[in-house]
Length: 316
Ligand code: 2E4
Ligand code: SF4
Image (cartoon, rainbow, N blue to C red; front, top):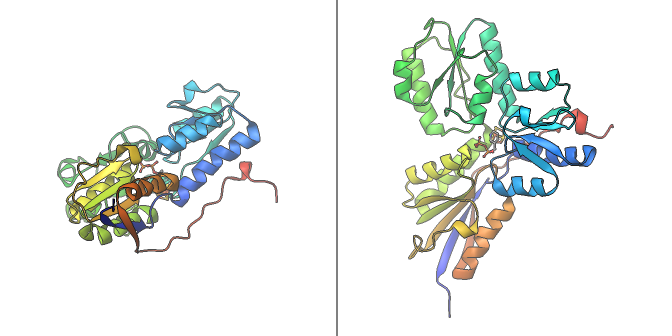
């Protein structure tokens, strides 16, 4: 029986970014250096496959520092932590390694610097997301005001409209954020901030690739986890760019084949925390049902790499 033809557009770049790569390496190197168990505060990155693989090697995932014994190393996830967390680890004399992505740390430093200069901070981000909690937690409670929508900007109550600065989460939708930033600049013309926002290169590139291919795709699948902010944004970007069916899948078993009946083309991408093995698994699932022609849609080249912290590097 011959299989129906299917053009499979594969986004490039997709999947792991430099911050995720570094964070996973930190856990692997910590396990090598100190042996199991090594504790990790929060999922190192938002992906079940990654977390399960590291758990198999001896990592123990917890949500709070108090769940860790003081005599084992603890690693802070790529999303960043409030200032109180390393302070508490130091007070308990724990060995800790911070796997916060350097691009998130950069935002932390900006927020602290603006505050030191006497500016009140506004953060654009999603309430309760660990990165937002971590960035807001660089300053004392209540010091950073959170806005999630342009409407929030209308209602935010500030100390002095002329002494404000803003930062953003790194994984937001470029288009949604541009609207919120425009609303902030309109209401507070003297607000200080980054040139555009703090959305990172990887988030930007993955969204641009989806935008380029979505209009050609009968359907779009984003490989990623339901708690992965950057992955969820890719689904929204795809739908908004004209793809009639855009869906998040953790792996091949999640694909709703009935919803895909009759398609002639499919777009595949992956969030920054999704390993390539799961993308391969999804592509292989299509090959068993269709005569697949893969076309890679490349909109950017990436060559970013971040060094692992010195405590884990071999002496030169
Ligand atoms: C840290 C910062 O933030 P998000 O939910 O997208 O995290 P995820 O773990 O899915 O992706 C990696 C990451 C980590 C992104 N930005
Ligand atoms: Fe860092 Fe961006 Fe990757 Fe987040 S998505 S870990 S900010 S490079």
